[in-house]
Each structure stands twice: as structure tokens, then as C-alpha cells.
Image 1: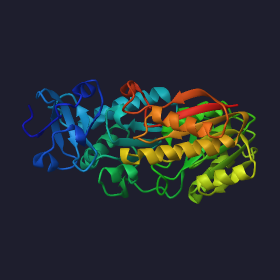
Image 2: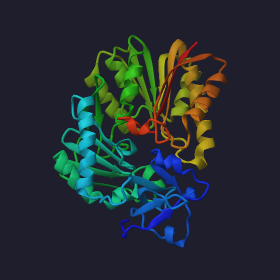
Image 3: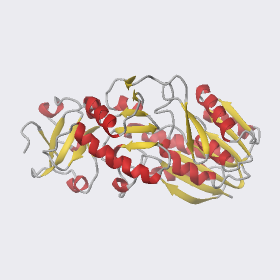
Image 4: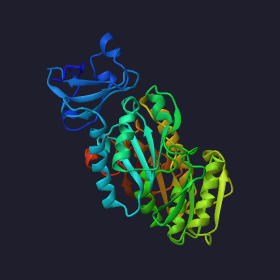
Length: 398
């Protein structure tokens, strides 16, 4: 056994089989914690044992996080260095090369690529790293070296901002690891639409690549339809619908910067389609549209994470219920309602129940026609190319 790594141990009642079968996390309440384990340096490595002292693998640890340990390897002798990163990235790259014809995609998607807490989005020769776990921060120079060796980018942005880092007890930062920061948004083609991603100032990496398959599903429902995209960011679902022949598109978001980029995308995607924006709190905007008796053939709501952790789960589920209630009123008879969640703490069953409650409070009937999304709690998570914490429901309203 590697003598340099300390040992951490599961509590007797913790289900070790879940870890053996591929679950990539160990929560702080599942471990035997004492002064020694609490003193471990965030981002350092440790060997996980079950209560009977059977080895479960090599894990990165962070005593400041609810997710205390993230699995890196079954082999406790594994050296986590630039060569190790390069092997993981090469494998991820080969898969994306089969899936996408252009170099615009999520290159590394955390646990799905066996790199927990790491996101790398690719914009041709520019890469954006989201280091959402302490171990990634700790080994960032090795990661950058590997990306330079495998991809040979001209620029690498480190976007260490967002709620995930706060939950890890990490400081926010946005800086260049290679090259210069772009001075304008980057044009990205996806599902026939044109998007503009602001990697310098925008939310997360500037675009939500992980929504690509859901954009595609909804756009196939949108030809000739009026579309309302709430929490639209830079126009995700709305621009995809426009590319597939929507009759009109309206985007709602609280950020004028995001809506300005959506307007640029609309002009580049299909300027013949009427395109409107509403800058407002999403709940207020929907309530206003309801008061004005507005309806749309397709309504999409893709809000931020209302339940990022267990402590906020009940309040978050009430927020999703409220979204579903307001949004369902805005859907014309026979139209479609798409509801999304990226909350870690609200699993699909709870999210679906909250949405159905919200729709039910309007007295309307709805047929669930599509369920999508996966996360680390999904049984096939490790086999999915673009899995995430996203949960998506599409209803046909009656």
C-alpha cells in the first residue's frame, strides 16, 4: 500500500457496496471522522477502507465539503500527475470526436469521465476549466500541462466561480492559464442554432453544453409554434427552436448581458423569425404574462439550482412547484411544457412530483412524454457521455 496516503474509513452502517459498484462520492456523515481526518488538507489524497478495512480505492478529500471524498482510482498506487490526466483527457476526446463534427462541446464532464468535480468546455482552440473540487485546484498545473499536450489549445481560461466552489469552501477566481482572455463572445454552432458564449464574464463557461440533447428534443416540437423560453440565459432552448422553424420566440432572463447575447444569436440563427426578450425576474415575468392572458405553444423553464444541497431541498421543491404552476398556465391547449432542474439534492422522483403538483394546482391535465437527465445517483451514470445533474420533463398539456 502507498505509505504516503492516509486512510479514511466508512462507518459500520454505511453501504460500502454502493462505492464498490461505482458511486463516485462519500459524504461526510458516512465516514468515521476524528481530529486526524478533519485535519486532512483539502485536495489531498487518501485511501478509503470499509469498516472491515477492505480497500475501496484512492480518493481525493475535502473536510470542508459535504462531499468529503471523491473517487479517483481503484488502484491506490495510482500517481495523479500530468500523464494520468492526459490518459483521461485522451479517452474523453476520442468519445467526443465520435459524437460531434465540430470542436465545440463539453470535453470533460466530471464523474462521467472519471474526473469528479472537473468540467472542461471546448471552444475550438480555447478551453474553459471549471475546477469545482479542491483536488482539481491542487493539481491544476498538471491538468493544464495535460490539456496542452493532448489538445494543444491557444488559450485556457480557469473559471473558478459559482455555487459549486462555494459549497467546497473554495475561493472564486477567473484567470488565464494560457494565452489571452477573449475580448468578445465566442460564436458557437449547436443544433442548427448560433449562440454567443461570453467566457470572460458570463455564467459558468458561457454556455450550457450539457443541455444540447434536450435542446434538440424540444426544437423538434417547435416548428411553426410560438415559444417562450424562461430562464433563457443566452437563448438556449429559444434559439434551438428558432433554428427548427418556430413561428416566434420570446426569451425571459434577469441578465441583460445574457439577453443581449441571445439577441445576437437570434440575428445569426434566423432573423426572419420574430424574437423578443423580457428582462425581469422570471416569476414576475410569468405572473405578468398570465395576467395579460398570454399563451404559447411551447414553454420552457430551465431555472438555476433551487436545491443545491439537502438543507435547501424543501424550499427548492416548492420553487419548482411554483415554476410548474405558473408555466403551465401559459401553455396553449395541446402545447408542450418543458421543466428542467440542475439541483443535486432534488432527485428525479422529487422533482417530477413537485412539477406534477404545480400543474395539478391549475386544474389542467398533462401527459408526460419525455424524461431525461442523469447524475451520479443514476445507475448508468458512468457509461453516459454527457451525463450531468440535469433532470428534464416534457409534458403535453391538455
